[in-house]
Amino acid sequence: MLVDRCNRGEEAATRELFRSYHKRVHGTLYRILGSSRDIDDLTQDSFIQVFKSLPTFRAEAKLATWIDRITVRVAYRHIAKQKKLPLPDDTLDEEPSMRPGPGHQAESREAVRRLYAALSKLPAASRIAFALHEIDGRSVSEVAALVGASKTACKLRIWRARRTLFTLASTDPILAELLDANAHDPTEGSPS
View 1 (tube, one colour):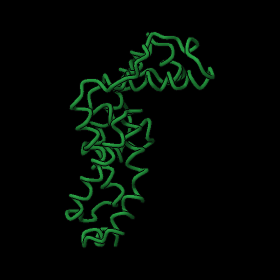
View 2 (tube, helix red, strand yellow):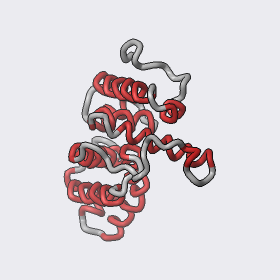
View 3 (cartoon, rainbow, N blue to C red):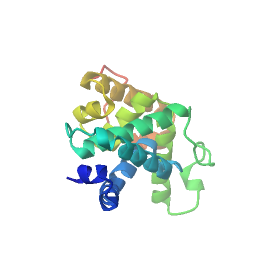
View 4 (tube, rainbow, N blue to C red):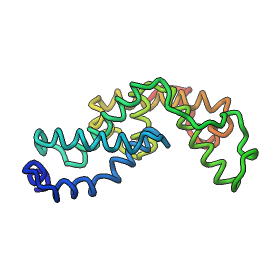
């Protein structure tokens, strides 16, 4: 087993584990944090934690799930340290048509940038639950397992995040378009 080989100090096994899970860890962090210059450092921090904790891995969950939990904790600590994630220098008030480059691609990048700017205003727990569920496409059950919360708590966090994003989108047409005008308005009703 790969874990046993890593625990015995086999360098080839360590490299294999890193290569096998690098894209997964990097992708999870990217979907939670957006385009952040800290992603590579946080990916490295995640693997440092993985290798430090590997002797305690009891195979009660899949190795991938266990690594995901560590990655989410690294992301949570990063978000908790910062009140706001660094944003690009351009302003949120700038219209996409005023920027150079292909219109649709520039508008898409601007919409995603605004989404992560809005996500940076959320509490860490809500942001992570929302990102794992809505952006990373994980089920509520999987999100609950990764963040160590009940499914009900995760549903509530996701609903609150949607409600906040929908409220912010009411004054930001670019964000509103990204969130899709046909989506259910989470400001009406409660989480189901």
